[in-house]
Picture (cartoon, helix red, strand yellow):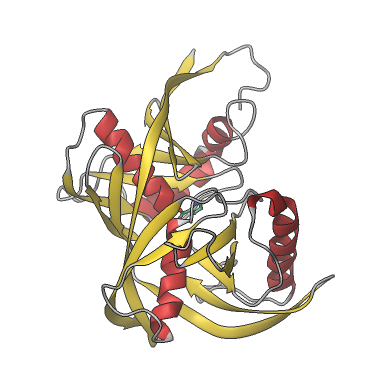
Amino acid sequence: MRRIHVIDSHTGGEPTRIIVQGGPDPGPCDLAQRREVFRQQFDHVRRSVICEPRGSDILVGGLLCPPLDPACTAGVIFFNNTGFLNMCGHGMIGLMVTLAWLGRIGPGVHHIETPVGIVTATLLDSHRVAVRNVPSWRYLRDVTVPVSGYGVVRGDVAWGGNWFFIVSEHDKELSLSRWKTLSEFTGSIRQALESAGLTGADGSPIDHIELSGPPVDSRADSRNFVLCPGGAYDRSPCGTGTSARIACLAADGLLSPGQIWRQESITGSVFEATAERTDNVNGHPAVVPTITGSAWITGDLQLIFEPSDPYQA
Ligand code: PYC
């Protein structure tokens, strides 16, 4: 009987499930190649760990892998109910707290391999983690798209480890009670981007849609609502979404190096973010964001796959 050992956590309300034992072995290649092997040969494992009946559409999973580079602590491949992610900020915070829970790391600086590069994560205490993300940058500014039922919507296309369309001009109230309305609006934006043939710089779909608005807590700088690729909304302020947002702010001269940006989520949880200037990417100004947030363990469990279960995967 197959068993997979997972550790569940949440980061600012957004859950992460890390496979720590019993998962697939996609081989000793780099993380981008391992993600392809996972996608092609072990997609049933992704589905059975994340989707119902063991999981749900809001879970983000991570396969803990041995690193290729001995200077790194670990590698990770993030995935969700519809496929694979490039990077995941809340998931990286969850991974670090998971490794601390297992006694595999202590406070300090750790390098973690991901399919889009090495991320430096500092475990500050058993819950708090600072993630120095991959270089983040704005690809397109002030793009307009006709959105069926809503009219023309304007936004920026930016990379923060995933592709985002960030909309600041809208008439929507960013409150949790409006999550259905906000999900419908952002879902329609995503469809409109697809119909218009708008993609990220590498031709990948812009699969995360972020609405920005004023914060509810006056100590924060902004509140967001982020629609994730699988249709669920991020309960946390979204680490890669916050990275993409501060890349746009820095490009507009609205965030100086080292200045703290407090990003509030739709649930009220907060990430602190700072941006350091780095070399331009594809001719665009870029920053290296550091996102700080906290995670807590919610489960340490064995998933069971009974051979006679017709719905095991
Ligand atoms: O925190 O980067 C993030 C993230 C991506 C999707 C869900 N959370």
